[in-house]
Each structure stands twice: as structure tokens, then as C-alpha cells.
Length: 428
Image (tube, rainbow, N blue to C red):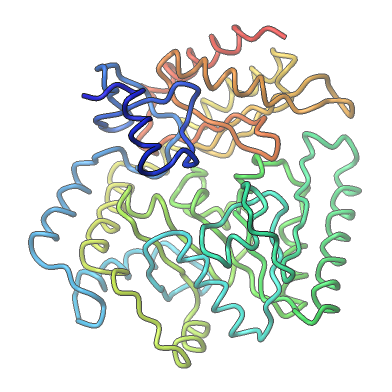
């Protein structure tokens, strides 16, 4: 077994030194099961962060479905295969609001790229509205609208970013914040129209996850949707982080947010680590796009992916994982709010089912300043206590606790105990 230092050196000579690694001292994992990792030295770490293994690392049902189907047949969608149709029917049964058709892909990037392509064809426009701190993928189109990662690709001229407000950081009345934000959106739309780009679509994560899960004013989502559609655009909901029961109360983040999009993009947790994605939309939109484009993706929607995706949905249903996210998330939220009350450097708790965070700041009220160094210190302290979490937000000052939904009541006390001890260790 190579040492971490040896492996980092070899990694830098092949992958390069610019591919990021978590932690000051990276971890080398050799196995995982459920919500637990095993490190090269044999120590176990609790996974409080990774949403990709949605129903648990190396889930037996998923592994069995993958291997059995791979040992039987794996072909592309130009051939008939019942497994693919069976999965499509099961997946679409989880949607509402006329969202009853699906395109498949292999990554969230492919899904978001396709959704934008569809929106541009249907509207005849190319302009996009995104948040001013977001990430939706790695293609050239998506790099051109990325506002939440360092990239040499400049913001494309057909993109207008919108600042998403956080009432935990803005002490003004909610109605004032709402009016200001919607006013900024009106200006962004007008700017796209005046430049000749028009509005093709808005693209938002339903929970604004990368943005730090801001507490938004009531009416913001509705206001955004109404204005985008009035401008002739479509509404795209990126469910890569917020979907598949993460909120505990709803299967999809757009339902949690109280709106119905025109296009929904799925990724990461869809295949529990197997690369697959989708764009879910209406019959009318699929017909309009499909009748004018021979859209084909060699690996997308293959029987192995369908078997894996179906196993994820069955596991969620039989193990009642969305209900678990609701109950465990509610218990966790109580403690997170207690931490926010107890520690002066915690500005607010962010709690959406099994997506939780703590916002760190120096000072309070209008004079508070984000404290990313404190958030980083807690992440490192949690690692020292064998629990993995991360950070999000434009300042990276919000803890990110987003475990697999297999995370249960047995693991919650371990995470909370480690978090409390880590918070106690902070010295300002």
C-alpha cells in the first residue's frame, strides 16, 4: 500500500497538481460500506458529506443489479430493451406537473447542457439567468455560466447572474429584500433583451446549495418563475444536489420550493455512483425538440444504467429513505439550531431535511463578517474525529453536512458529538 505522500506525488505526475483534494492532509480510502469509509491504515470514517452514494456505499441491491445486468446484456437505446422502459416508467411516476418524458445522459453536465440546448431551440433565445454563485457542470457552455468555481473561462455575454439573498445575513425586512432582488432580475432580463440575446431559461439549484442554502424571502421563487416565463424563457431545475428525497418532505427540490419547472436535470445520486443522468420534461417539449433533432447518446439509458437506477428507487422505497431523511434531519436540525444559539461565531443554522449547515461569522447583525477560516477549522477538526463534512457558500463559511440518505439514527449521535466537540475547540 503506497503512503499518502507517495500517492500524492504519483498523482501529481499523472493527473496533475491542480485537481483538488479535500483536507490539508488528504485521506486515502480503500473500501466503503453503507455510510462508512475504511482508510488505508484501517481506520473508519463516518461519511457526513457525499450525496453520490445516495442509498449507501456499495449498496448490495445496487451492486447486484449492476453486475447481473452487466453479465446479461448492455446495449444502446437504438435497440429495444424492456429494462430501460421499466425504469423510465418508475422514474417518471415520481414526478408531477406534466413532467412525463425523459432524456438520458451520463452526467449532470450532460443533462444541464441538453436542457439549455432544448430551451434555446424552443424559445429561439440564448440568454441565461443563473445565480451569482453557482455550479452546474464542466462543458464549455456551462463553464461560461459558472459563477461558483475558479475558472479561466470568462462569463459569457449571454449570461446574467442574479444575487440570491439570505435573510440570515441581511437584516432588512423580507419584503424589501424581495423587491430589491426581483428588481435586479427585471434589469437582468431587460439587459439580455436589449443585447439581442433574449431569455432562453433560468437555471437554478432548487435549494441554492452551492450558494450556502440561503434563507430566501417568501415569494422569491414564484417571482423568478413568473418573470422568466413572461420574458418567453423556460425554467430549469437542477436537482443534482436537492433531488431524490434529500429534503425529507418531497422527492424533488422544486416541489420543496413550491414551483413546477419546464425541465428538470438529474445526476449524481441517480446511480449511486454509477454515471447516469437525465432531463425530465413534458411530452410537448420532448416532441418539439425530438421531432427536429435526432438526439442520441451512445452510453446513456443503457440497460445496466437502468438496472442501477431502478435499484436506487426500489431501495429508497423499501428502506423508506425519504422518511428517514425527514426524521433524522428533524432531529439534527434541533441540535444545529441549538449550536447557532450557543456559539457566537455561528450566525445561523441551515436545515433542509438531510442537507444541513452552520453559517460562521465574526460579529453579529449588519456588521457580521463571514468566517471561512473557522468553518475550515471545524471541517479539519471533524476529520480528526473521523467524521467527514465540507464547506459551501461564496465565502466557504457554511458547513456542508449532506450524507448519503442511508445515514440513520445510529450514526446521528456520532456526527453530533463530533460536531459539538469540534465547535468547542474553536478559539477566536
